[in-house]
Length: 255
Image 1 (cartoon, rainbow, N blue to C red):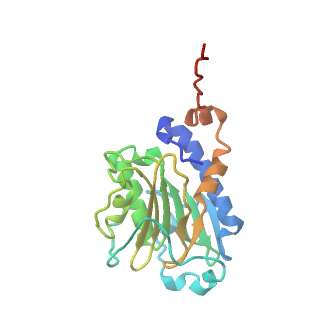
Image 2 (cartoon, rainbow, N blue to C red):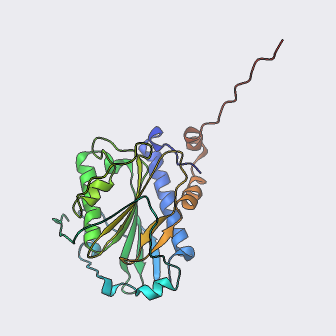
Image 3 (tube, rainbow, N blue to C red):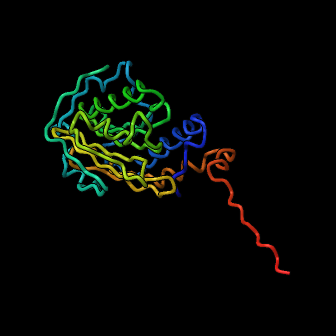
C-alpha cells in the first residue's frame, strides 16, 4: 500500500491512525518477531518531565541477552538500508529530565522503543527540540530506537528529524534525497551508536526496518504489513479524503 499524504488531513486524524499503527506494530512484534524473553507493550514510557525508570536505567552490552541466543531465534546482524553512519566515540549529552516499548523479561527492562512522529512533535521549535532531545537521552541510556516520520521536513527540521537526533553523536552532513523527503531511522545504542536511515516518499511501499535489541543484532519490523493493518481501521470518512476515488474521463462518442 502506498504511503498516504498525511499533511492533507488535520492532526487529529493522524493521531487516531498513530494509535492504530502502534497497536499493529505491538501485535506483530509479540506474534513471533521478537525472540524468546522479549515482549512489546504500548505506552509504557513517560514523556519529558515525568518520572520514569528510563531516566535512570543504564544498560550495557553485558546486561543484554547474549548474541548467540538471538542468532538462534532469527535476529539479524546486518541492516540493509540506504544510509548508515557510526559515531566516532560515545559522548555524553546534557540531560533534561506513545510509543511501543520492547522489554526483556530480566527485570522487565526496556531495551528498545518504536516511535511514530506526530504533527505535534513538529508544531514548534520547543516541541521538536523536546522530542529529539528525549530520543537522544534514550540512546545515551542504551535504549535502541526506531523512528518513523511520515511528515515532510519544515523550517524546524529542514533535513528531517534524523540530523537533529544524530548531531550529538556524530555531526556529519546529511541531506534527504529530494524525491524521498520522509524518514525511517533506526538507532543502535551502545559504546559507538549507529544510525540506519531509509528515506521514503508519499506513494512508496514501506520497507521493513531494523529494531535493535542489542548493539549488534536486530529484528525486522514489518512496517508495510502493520501500516496496512492500521489503515484497515481508519474510518471511511478519512479514507476517502486520503484515497479519493479516481475519476475516469469518458471520451465523446465519434459521430
